[in-house]
Image 1 (spheres, rainbow, N blue to C red):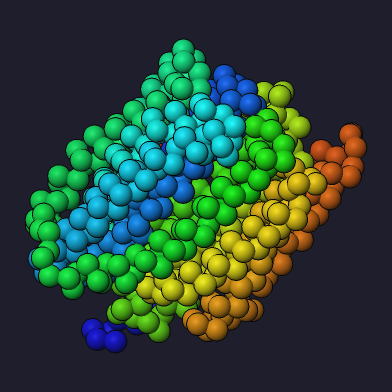
Image 2: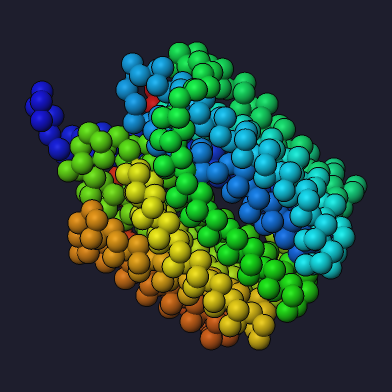
Length: 505
């Protein structure tokens, strides 16, 4: 390489940027997740299982509608703008303008169709007219989120992770002050209105931070008349849209099937277990924010280093996910009782099924970020097809007989199949070395299986000390498997915290 820069230097510089970006993202996501936990505690304790089940199906239906409204455009903006040089401001403006025009058009058509379908969903499908009314209210927040999504994606595209973190932290803190009085005073309708108002607050925070980035990058709002930019955006967005169209509707289908075979109470229990387990995903989410634009540039400029960098990211993600996953797997009843109340402690067996599934989802997402960074979205779509079909077929088979446990089992098996498929794809496409990936995954499999077995089969007073011993042994084994660089990356947040608390003089 020119100027004496080695491949190792490139990887280290990318790792340093990943480290800094992940630290900012992790801090923001921790605050955001804490706010989400507080908001969910408020909602679950105030609404109870039945109303929380209704609220969950409204949000899940809204998630399906959001896929059509955004149409995969924000992901396309991140991909293309992150790969542009500093001098290509006019092209960046045209691509952004094309993405904004596509999003506004898709949102208008989607929301119109959703309003027409709302009475059918509420009365005919769920047997609850309140679902129709709440869904129409929630669509207001969807419009706000969808229209602002192309602008919000600029932060990630240009790796402005600090600004993203400030935005997320500010929005999260403000959301608590909105959610608490509305849910306590107005119950279920207040919870839905809180999502709408919080969407408006997010727009305010986004726009206040976006102005500086817009001026710095010398962007202009240009709506192109030629079809070339639209075709380029759609070529990436369409498979992203289709992939989302498989994932979220499959989750929606499983939840709808659960309501048909059971009640909204069953869905409320499942949603509480799903929400608690999904808190683990803040780790791969924090990694993914800086990872996609970095991989986009790495694939374009240094493709030979792509495999090594993705492998290291996968290993670090696995090491980070395992300890909190084991703790949650060992003591789900404690977390459910403390956070949501005694009404939801019965969901502990569901958490023990969901935690391994969410762990697999988290590590598999690293391969997904690799697919997004290299623009292989049609390949990602094919992977999602397998997952979606598996979840739907398993749900049809298991939910009528086992209700929430059947849905949680379906989720676990589907993600197990997706991980195997994504692992084989990554090995074949990027020539990843299985000897680098297998040890952390083998440790994770043995640890998750062992802790779940001990926590489920042993009784007090032996259960707690035995479980804690297994978790400690797993953490020690992780350190034994880490390279020096991996240990340095993982210890950096602790080092920075110590320096912040006790700065050197």
